[in-house]
Length: 359
Image (spheres, one colour):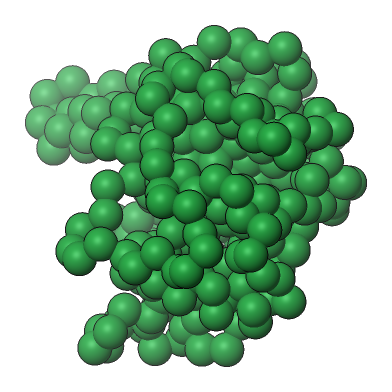
């Protein structure tokens, strides 16, 4: 099953007209994106967008063979003109299945936001899932097998990937392609890094992909260290790198501080913004967690772990430090470093950056 991406941008496109932001200013050449529309085997068009016929021609394709046009999300503004020869666009009711004469089977997937997702099975059994902007599946059941390809709003709804991974709909070999890219995406290489952390990638408009063919699926970074000064957004960045995964163990090394209302408020804010499926453990005993099998670890933070290790080693007492404290601390650091080096878990760790902020 061949998929041609006539566009990969948000409904308004990228760059947005008259927008001076950095993302729009950098959206030039292959980084400029029309509204997302997908052409499958020249027979099925998912989302009719302005200029679709010209976009197909630029990609070396034609819309003359299209037998079905399906819409995935409500369209704001005037209706898009239907090019001559194309069937009128329609929408499949949630849970219903449509079979084309070409052998393609399309099942409508219910969402938690306005719109419709489409699960498409090709004539030879390849499976694709397309989600509209801002949409994530609702009430998912475990599929018989993972999709070969998923196209979704990875930047805007990373939790959609988490839901799909939780039921096995996204597997290790699923090609996850980010679409509906808007001007809230980071410009330049940072977009690629952000998507790689979610196990996804972006491609330019006009690219044709073969669904089910092996692609070099981005490897999720195994070990990531997020550095920065105090209150610089380190924790938010660390959480962002794992928000596309359903099960994450959040390791808080700060402990509790009785009577410190500011600290309590910060801890509460951290908990409230984390996904409900994540678990939290408060400990500075990191080595056993790194040695065990399990979901990704988010360690926040190593600076507080080091403070705790220094307290335990007696680092603040010159006599204790000289006698055994330094040796004890060095051994703790060595053990942690080795555990991070050999762990099989995905790890994102936060630490204060020396010389940045108040540290």
